[in-house]
Image (cartoon, rainbow, N blue to C red; front, side):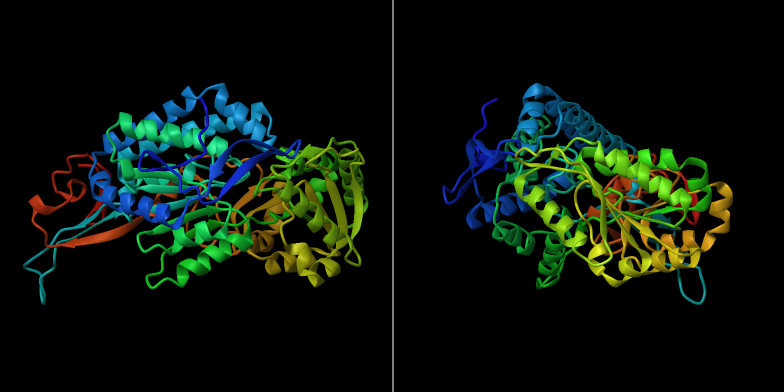
Length: 526
């Protein structure tokens, strides 16, 4: 399939010819054809106009048809075959096996949301029947459910060119809730994005969806993102990326005459706490497990374990030496794009130049274009608490070991951490029970607590919560992974004293969809 480089608005190609850019092969720094057209202000307006026009028609589609649309997107992505994997590999330097696995995750997410739409209980229907004879005042008939919010802007992520990109979890959950979606493609992999966008358009056509249900826009400038967020037709935004960019989008949305929610995932250091029992039992295995987690995907995961806390002593020393040995023997890796590699090296240099911080080990291999080495740093509790820079995410294959003189110091640092996506505890069951205050402190800091594991690898399932207190995300109440992600793009509406004929099917007494509902305080699907 030949790439065209144009924006796709309501199923049709659009190009202002105003500004262009190219994808870059991160292994050679060479430009990849074709050139891609930056979306103009007029094209952004056009895309949102079509999204508004499509909203009423799309939200009224039967659940089975919306589910079929999501399933068809999955089929169209698979139909791209090796073309998609090869282009993604050229634009990101990610290995084919990783991209094939990520494609599987993307397809399975779409199917998961299709099943959720068909089953229907996600709308959270609640019915309280009226009682006209109640004294001293009659009780009204009150019914509530979730409805879609309207056009959603999805900013594609750099580190997951498929699963958090054009047809990833944000797009899938927004479409599943009944909302049109406009995707702002990531400029690091525009060709990959175009291929997937074409698959979405084909699926929309095959399942007779309104054309404006999906649009795909390119852009390298902040102006494209600003216009999308500030446009009056935009009702919600999903973003995965840096704290700086995510906070900028949140501020833009809050400054609108009518503020809208921005569901921004902005990363974290994902602290790991090594308790005495774990170090005594398996220091070597812990070092190997941490090394694998830190270097997975060249460290380019928002759940990368960036800081490790433990008490000093022989077992922590043995752990540190083993970890340093693994890092020293590791091969370099190519990062997703040159600017990201530069930022990683700059952040690493900044950290190592702080007084009291030492570079315990990094790999010494000769680096090719776009490559970087894994690194492990070491410091102590006092230095870590003194320098806020050490508490900031270093996005790449690096971690910082922090020795805490006492368990009280470990608890103090846990309480002082900023919000996190994850927090990990390694220990015995007895350790866990005797360190309940540490667990309670981390409950207040992270969206997911892990025991005797590592945070990389986020299971896509109904129980998953991939979120956390600020600055990990802009709203800790919501997840970007799992079926609960759909709730970001829906809002509750209450119907009072409506006749049965005027109620949505989901709220009628006869329950034609056989949904599970809370009726007069009791769960039932009758």
